[in-house]
Amino acid sequence: MTVGLVEESGVQLFCRNDALVVGAPNALVESAKDQGEALETLDTDTVDEVHEWFTYFDGIEQVLGPTFYGYSDRETFSSIESDARVLTSADSTAYRTFRSSIPDEEWENGGMQFTPDETVGLFVDGKLVAIAGYEVWDGLLAHLAVVTHPDHRNQGYGKAVVSRATEQALADGLLPQYRTSDAWPWSVTLAQNLGFHRFATAYFGVYQ
Image 1 (cartoon, rainbow, N blue to C red):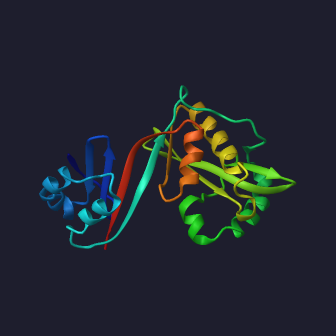
Image 2: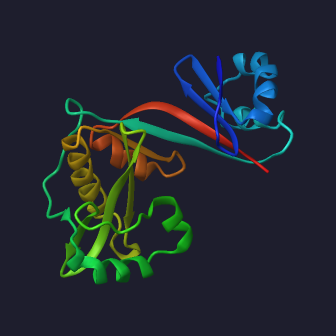
């Protein structure tokens, strides 16, 4: 087990095979080290056990996860053909209309600021039905985000825009990262069908 310092307002736990990595803010680093023995014997495949481990920390008010962290590269990526394209400033009205159709909670999970010549979108019958894009982390990772219109889901549109955004990230020399809740198996399947492989499963304890 490895414990490190992070700036997040909570405790992070990453599980990969037999390796465990904990990230904690300064106030909780010592507590994380003290809980190392309990973590070593933890069955990380049992969600309830992992959530219970977070109760050892004073001030943790909510535990999020398990979360899928997947990565793809030029060898594993499996693109799909579609009409998804990079949006331009001429698409700003369509973007605003699309944004107004997405509940705020969903937007917080997958939405992104409209950036002409970067944001990817897919139009069906003249209507914007899905968008995707990425935020660059540390000059290396392309952290992907995707949102599909509520009336146009389960039709492959999210997969289409993520595919196009991933192509763009790879062309920019970045490593595409797809993060989503394991409680949304359709989202995990979308990523895996495009060649994203699970690198780690993560949990996050929100510190008050």
